[in-house]
Image 1 (cartoon, rainbow, N blue to C red):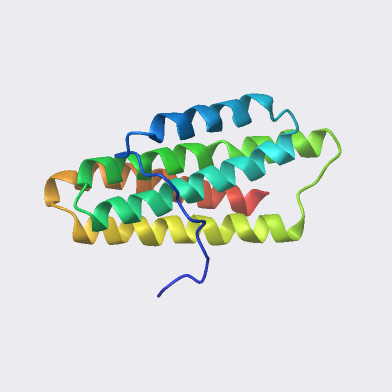
Image 2: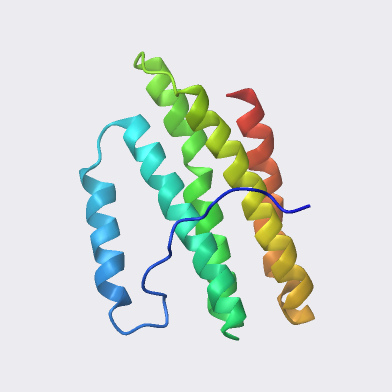
Length: 145
C-alpha cells in the first residue's frame, strides 16, 4: 500500500554540477545546529530529501547514484533516535507530531527502497537490501521512543 507522506522537494540532485554547494550548505547547517531536537528535525529533512533524490535519480536511470542516496537517507535517519534520547535526557521530549512524522517517514523510506528493489537491475539488490535492513532496525528503535 502507498504511504501518505509528502517528501520535500529534493532540489539539486547529486548529478548536478552545483550539488557540491548544496552539500557544503548542509554540512554547515549540521555543524551549527547544536540543539539535539533541532538536529533530529534537520536529519529528518535531510533523510527525506535524500529519499526523494533516490526516487528521482532512479526514474532518470541514474541507478548507482539513486542507491547511494538511499543509503545516505538511512544513514541520516539512523542518527535521529540517539538525538531524541539525548534531547529527552536534557529535558526536551519530542512532540507526538514529530514521532508520528518519524514513523511515517520510516515507512515511506521502506516503500521507496522496495520500489527500487523491484525496479532496478538485480545486481543492485544487495546494496538496496542493506538499506532496507537498516530501515527495519530503525523502525524497531522508533517503537521504543
